Image 1 (tube, rainbow, N blue to C red):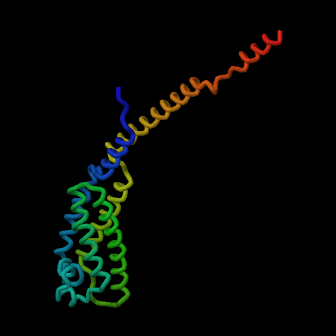
Image 2 (cartoon, helix red, strand yellow):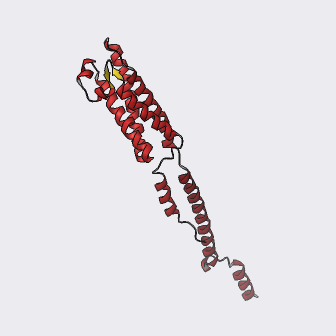
Length: 203
């Protein structure tokens, strides 16, 4: 029976690692993305909706939208609205990681946006869309993080098979080395036979 090639198994394991097994968490991310889209049509800052802040329309300017609120709207849209949606559809590791990174940055700016508006003394408050967007961002951040650290089922199975294959290869190499050691005439212990020959010559 042919033993599996550890190098081939390592390549298959790397290929398997390029996908993320989201399981039921896929629906949590999908719900967060849908919730974010709802937040974009609700009042975000004052009477300006989320999409108006994204487009920097006159309504957003009238609401005296701060730079941190603009940045939060843009980055959260990229992280949740675009990248998270793509991650749910494709389940690719290369998309899930940027989705988490960008969304985490947007969470920081959401807090800065709250702090800056509260400290500026503006009479215009944030709307429900702003807080709904934060809820979506939090859901994405804390759902995608454990997904990035976990192995999918096929990756774990290939890792076990590769470890077993490498162990068998090491045993086979040790056996071959022992056989060569026994067959090497330079390593044969013939001290007793030579001593007997010397004894016979002295007799």
